[in-house]
Structure formats: C-alpha cells, structure tokens
Length: 589
Image (cartoon, rainbow, N blue to C red; front, side, top):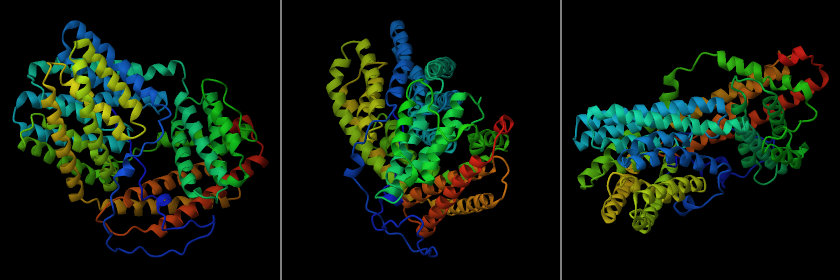
C-alpha cells in the first residue's frame, strides 16, 4: 500500500511569480501584518496529475513489502486458509515504513508501527464482534482514523503515514468476527509484523550506514545545485530552501546519540562542506560536491573533506549536541498534538460523514468511502484538494485495470495471490512519481484482497468501489472546507519568534571572543532547524483558506536575516578552526 507523499505547496515562496527576487543581502521594507480576508484561491487540476521522477529508493519499499507479505500468504494458501490473509497482510504492510531512517532509528519506528497496527486492529476486531450496527462501526472507524492521523503526524513517522493503519482497521470493522477469534487473528498479525521488522532491518547487514550515506549524498547534491546558481541566479531562492531542508534532514540521520563510528564522523565532515556551500555558494565548486555524493554509493570509503581534518569536531559539535538533545526533557505531548487538532477534527468528521453517506446510498462496503476520505487530509486545504483529484483519477483507472485483470486472477488461488503481490510491488514503484499513479495499482489490489475469502462478481465490486470513491472524496473534501484551520497562522507567528530568538543567540555567539567549545555549532544548528520549520509553516499556511492574511514580508525578511547569520556563523567556525590547534582531547570533547 502506498502512503501519503506530500507534495510541495504551489504557494511556497519560490512559486509565487508576483514577488520578484532581490539580490542577496538586499532587504525589503518590512510592513506590519494586515488581517484582511484572503480571497479564495483557484484550485489546480491538471497540474496535480503531472508525473515527477522516480524516488531514489523506490525499489526498497517495493521489494520489502513483497518479501514481507509473500511468505505468510503462500503459507495460508498451502493450508487452505487464504481467508485469514487480511491479518497477515496487516503485519506485513509495516515493512513499508522507515526506509529513509538509520537502522537504529528504523528498529524503533518499525516496532512502534507494528504496535500501532496491532492496537488499531484490536479495537476494530473487538468492535466488530460486539455490534453489527453499520453506523456504529463507521463512527468507530472515523475516530480510529482521526487518532491514527494525529499520532502519525505528531510523531512524524513518515510515509505512508496513517493510510495503511486506517485501511486495515476500517476493513476489519466489517469483517465477520467473534470475541473468541480475536486473539488468534491478532497473533497472526503479530507474527507477520515481526517478520516485517526482520525484512526492514535485513539490509543493515550489508550496508549498515546506507541511510546516512544516502541522505548525506542528497544534501551534497542539493548544495551543489544551489552553488551552481552562485547564490543570485535564477531559482537561487528555491535551490537554497531545498538545500537547507536536505542538509537538515541529513543532520537528523547523523545526530542521534548512536555510536560515533568512523563512517558517521566522515559523513559529518562532508555535511559541513555542504553547509559551507550554503554560506558561500560563489566560492564553492559544485562538481566537487557532486563527486563526493557519487562516491557515497555502495560501501566504499567515505571521501575525506580536505581542509577540515580533526578540527572538524569543533565545527561539528555533533556529539555534544546529540548528548544534550538526548538528556533534554521530552516536550509535552500536548505541544505536539495541539496544532493538529483541526486536522484531527477534519479527519473524524469527514470519515464519519463519508461512511454514513455510503450507507445511505446502500453501499455494502462503507469502509471504502471512509478510507478514501481519510487519505485526503494533508497539511492544508490546497494539498487536500490535490490529493482528492489524484485519488479519484487513480481509483477510476484502477477499477478499469481490475476489470482487465479479474478474469486472470480468478483462474486459481495461486494466481490471485501472485496478482496481489505484483500490484503491491508496482504500487510502491510508481507512488513516488505521483500519488494517482500508485493508486492505479492499489485499487485492483484492494479489490482482489476482498476475494481471498471467496470470489465475487466483478461488476458489483467495481460499482461499489466507484461509488465509494466519489462519495468519500466529495464528502471528505467538503468536511475539510467546513473545518477551518486558524492555527496555521499562529504556527507561522510562533515560528517567526523562534527564528528571531535563534538568530539573536547565534549572532551573540559569533560576536563572542572565545565561544565555548561546540557553542557555535549548537547555535547554528538551532537556527538552521528554525528556518526550515518557518518555511514549512509558511508553505502550509499559504495553502489554507479562511484565515487572516499572512505576514509574508516578515517571513521573507526573517529568512534573509537568518541566512546572513548562518553564513557568518559558518565563516566564524572555519576561521576559528583554522587558527586554533586541537588536541585529541579537544576533538573528543
């Protein structure tokens, strides 16, 4: 099953043609934010169907899901119990998660996803065994979807997000069930989830630093693209934002308090070079960054970032920061969940209304409408509309594909299983190019899964799926329009304050005659993270409706000021390390 791969907002700073870019260092006059009403924006249609390039690691989730799902399915086929495949698939689909994370973090995320899958499935199975009232089951499914959406967003579990969890729990709500069967079905899911964990961790035996090498290479390529603009060329603003986000993502994979192996230390030094490119693009050789990125493929030695040497540890300060982050008190849960309240309400209301509407129309599988609505909700209303268009187009084409494949799949149970595995693979292979293309493969797979228990009339399945898709998309989007997200603007204001405080702290640290070891790096990292969060908050709020006008001038000026301070911080670090000798004891500090 594919997940929710969010697309960049079309209203981000780089895509607004009405605001010409200014040379680096030139400030625009700031203006106070006005609270005028925002006009309703024109929603895109054809643009959201445009195909992009394939994901760099598209084959990893595609192969993983096949490896996780195939053995349990074939075992059930041999036992003549293919009707239980839904429970083993629930655990096997956990293999789709955390492919971009280092293996230590991946182990934790996969375990948590499997636990979340078990929890949602347990609630659904118990509810299905206690009542057969379809409306009650729809309401339970809607609440589960809202909880799954909120938790996945708050923990930033990553693609495919809550969609997989909601698909399984919603389908289980309408599976015939008794309380006595629940433990056995959950046991099957737990066993399959354990196997999925093994599948997800297995590549670490061959490439223990594969994810870190990959994210560092992406950061180097993004920094090279920015350096190629010289910092002032066409598209420099967009290239810099992309490079800053890539560098920040790479640091997230390198900073957790894990064992500082020589490979990780070497990757940190390369990442410093990417940050130097952000500070001084005109003085950076883009080809050298690309060469380093290319050398990170495979398990070969990590290139040495010349000019840094052991003094890079002062520049990095990574171990000090990682320990501080590890020892810092955890952020209260309500701080992470509070901003997500409008999205949770949209999900609960949209799923409940979509399921109820499907019931009113006499559809036998209202959970399809519920899942369609749940899959729509993105960070803002504009992206939610885009996902609705992609979902409808993909499902309609997927139903037509099912009509072509169904006669073949009905030849024998083994052919049915093989067809499902093929669609599992192709869905993950295509989802990175555009969500609708992956959905073309997901739809026939979901229809074929319903036939594991018994073969059904294709025409009835196709009609129900088409109707549920249209109902779920329409009702789900209308619910998103009805539930406004006023907190999007508040998030921008908070992000502005965070950037300003981080910038002032970094400026004071740069001005200090002898900064505390690691202070420059810690201040710079905090400011870089704050700038990335500000851009994400501004892009999310730009695609939201029915809110006060955003302080766009303040956001742009805050970003420019932060970029200047970041550049000064990096120059001070390089200057400091070039004239200050470091002993091995200093390096370990």
